[in-house]
Length: 391
Image 1 (cartoon, one colour):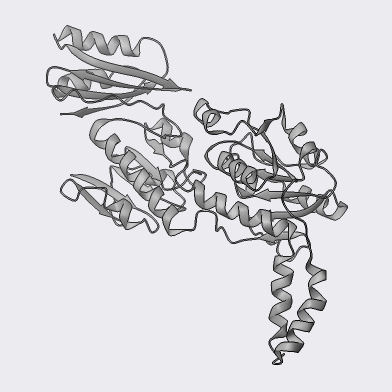
Image 2 (cartoon, helix red, strand yellow):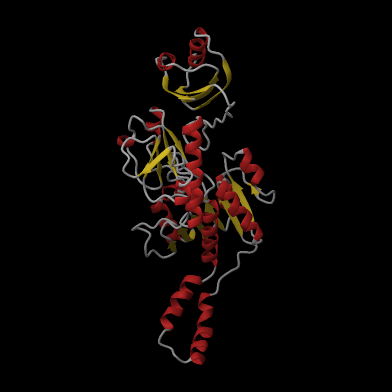
């Protein structure tokens, strides 16, 4: 029986992916095989002896001590792309808010509740509407920084609205490149992206390398009066630098999903309360995706969409036993493992080995049963983190 600890409210559609015959699920489980989490802050105290996986029902993992969990051989999963459509739609709202007087117009209309004469109300509205006139998005240039699952969707819908779209992503994957429209003009660097754009939309992950990425230096490349949209992560933007850019006119607006005390009430700032992935559909998609990944990992050792372990999927042959081994990415560990099996006349049917940074992961299908003595011998190899057996 696998034990799954849930933190935060996880969609029932996702929890239903764990077959109750083989899985116990609950928020009070103290030593689980896996944890499913959304925004709850995990600590090393959560890395109990049985824990093998953490599934984040969302893309960001800044609430998970990934490095420390990696040292313990705990695989951290996320769900890239599962909430992409929800975020994309909110970015469209941000684009529209940036160029039309929608919010001040709504605020003005809300003051007219005392006017009961329809003809006079219409007269007042017609006289006032010029105060809220704006510009169309058509023909304006959108710069998309980060062209992954969300960024590519934002670029596509902007093209459909007849905007010019420029993009930059230094880590563009092959899959993302195939998704991207040929009409997106690729920039050589961030500076060229910023200098070409009327509106810049951020879609990069929160990493040490992206913390405070939009700073005073990079803002100096923005067009005068440009608009900055941030539906990625709060920490990507250096808030004092953005406020200074708003004060100087370098930025005309900062539209984001991350309100802070310094932003609330500031002229030129529109902030929504973390609505990016807050749709029922996105929560369902994330929960289903992370549950399926955890089930496949716990039952077969396969890894998809991990932020700290390599992607590795090996189909089961239908017979034999599988070993899953996590180890430090150093020479001779796999060779020693295979020698242990060979010395005991255990034949290898199939195997895969992948590495990612300092971690290596192996799936080895063998014909014979893996005795406790065999597992202990492999576990004793210097650099091996953990070994799991699948019958």
